[in-house]
Each structure stands twice: as C-alpha cells, then as structure tokens.
Image (cartoon, rainbow, N blue to C red; front, side, top):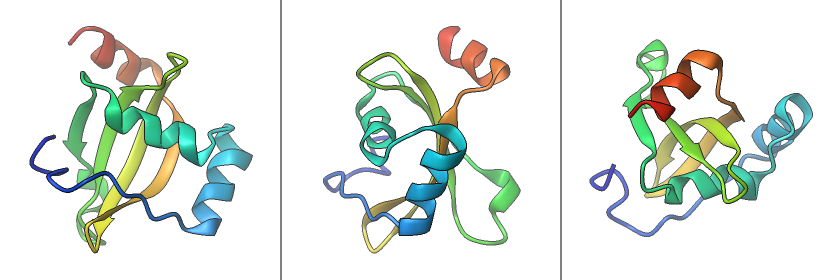
Length: 98
C-alpha cells in the first residue's frame, strides 16, 4: 500500500458519491478516509472495473472500529473515493484472519 500512497493522503470527493455513500450505507466522507490510516488494511486491485479505470478496494477499520470496504481511484495524485460501505461477511473474515 505504501507505493500507492507515496504522496500525502489528499482526498477529492465527488458530491454525488459522498451523498450516495451516506444515503445507501450511512458512511460519512471523513469516516471513509479513516481506513486509509489503518496499518493492517488490505488493498487489492478492483478487477471488475479495470476496463473503466484503475481502481482499488481497501478493507480497513475506522477509529470507532467500524470495518469498511472502500473502492477508490487516484486522480491527479488525490484519492477519489467511489464507494464506501460496511464489509460483507467474506471481506470481514479475510480482514480478521490476516
């Protein structure tokens, strides 16, 4: 994950995505940003969307121990969160068993 974040963690939020994450999953932007500081977060390439743009999935924990999955891309050296939601059962098991 270090290679992906060599620059400081700067976020760029699309108003629609921020509202969508709250309306669908009750995840606030700042809460989604917190998992990027999780030292044991798991990152993988989002292979379902490779034809659209290079995206990653990040499994991590917030300050309040909420386990989230965040899909994101990097644009102009900034992290652009596409979606943020609670981990599903499979993701939670993967995260907890690492």
